[in-house]
Length: 632
Image 1 (cartoon, helix red, strand yellow):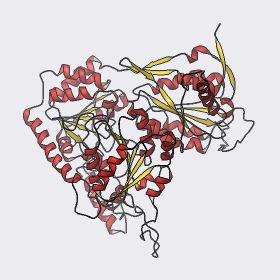
Image 2 (tube, rainbow, N blue to C red; image 1 turned 90 degrees about the vertical axis):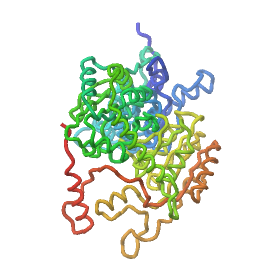
Image 3 (cartoon, rainbow, N blue to C red; image 1 turned 180 degrees about the vertical axis):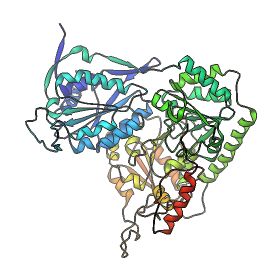
Image 4 (cartoon, rainbow, N blue to C red; image 1 turned 135 degrees about the vertical axis):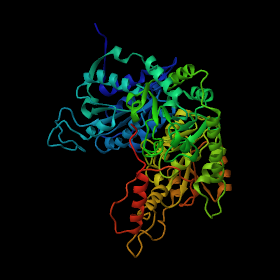
């Protein structure tokens, strides 16, 4: 007879998650480090009670540790960002669950779900839902849909989740959670897994099979290359004269950096990188040429324009990577894509090698033994990179202006941070500067979220990354004033939990990236500066009199104001020595200067306009767009 244990659905969720493990290459770890959340009427007596019970059992000596440690956050979106950042840092082998109440609490997580899925990062979302019995109908915070009583706001998670389910009966939990674990540990199909929990069902008791709660190890696969596909890939490489590797995040997630370095060394193929792939090869490797695409550098982009074979390894080919289909300009260019996901491997009519990046690189190097690009091509790559490094030095050096450029701050951080410290960013002008300029020495050092490029990611992400790396490494999140105002509240969570990070807050009184983009597209930086409304009726008055440094202090952080770069460097040392979250506040020049661009980005300009600036920009847009094409 099957043994059972009587638990509520919420208690069963907690007990089940506590016994899930992932394994790769013989290394086993808990799949869930804990649960972030905010309690409301939808989950306080369900998941909240279950998490409390687990904590009380620990305090009473019944258990050695909580089945699922809980951290109270301030914003549900921020919680999902923290979980995604943790998963990214752990190479997708561990993550957090996130619980919310119904309605607005649940919907706050939708943006985070989209970020996780776009970035192929595993997070488990547990939004509360309406009553399954429908006696209280409509319940508080229920959005009624006249077409169906089975629709709630949680249906909004469907397009942004890799897995979605609603638990209307307790016994449905068993197959649902098992399916969710499959998705969370799948190297190709992972992303947000959303399991909606009606608030009455959360508290309902059921006799669950005890085997449901046994220790379960999910083995993360390393798909190996199919022999015929490997042979085609080798033939494509041997037929090329000017191949170029584009290393994406899949290289890092696969732990394949060592193999990438060896492959590049042996074959003499230059290696460029995407935002997610920066650091996959150390910047000073003889075949490393840095960032490619719209926010890339002149060295990688020059090679990209002439490449006859582009070898994409673990990349999803965002429009920034391809410069909106313009940077790979050789009319005869071909693509060879290595990816665990066939969807990405097939992009650009590529020769497909559906495989784990590490296994593919080992196989390719073995099959290519004795083959390499010619000396002249390798020398060209080295010369182009050396020229770009001079540009980097110039950008990092002091500029003759009252306020420092943000590139000077980046240069100081690049120098001051250790090889395994982590720099975090996601949105604005900073990702472009960082991809072009940052000299990443390890795969761990560079943490950019640029698939969704979500403003507000950086601060909660810093919390997630710090939980992942521990106290031996500094975690530095760089935020502009625009991004800071989106999600600063997790600073309070860091203070509450004693989580120490360094936040670098650049104040330039506006949106630097969108302002520059607006100007270049003929829109005159409209609506991109933090100005009060003047007598003319436009937002062109004095600076908005807010004090972001004081705001950061109010959340519980230590704040050190930096008057120039010398004080910034001194204050960084103080922040590194501290055991408390510290904000380094520095005013920077809104207008840069920034590194020179070497590729395009497709942002459409109005075809007709009464503004001369827009008319001029449209003419430039048409000229640039002429180079755009499908890769067939």
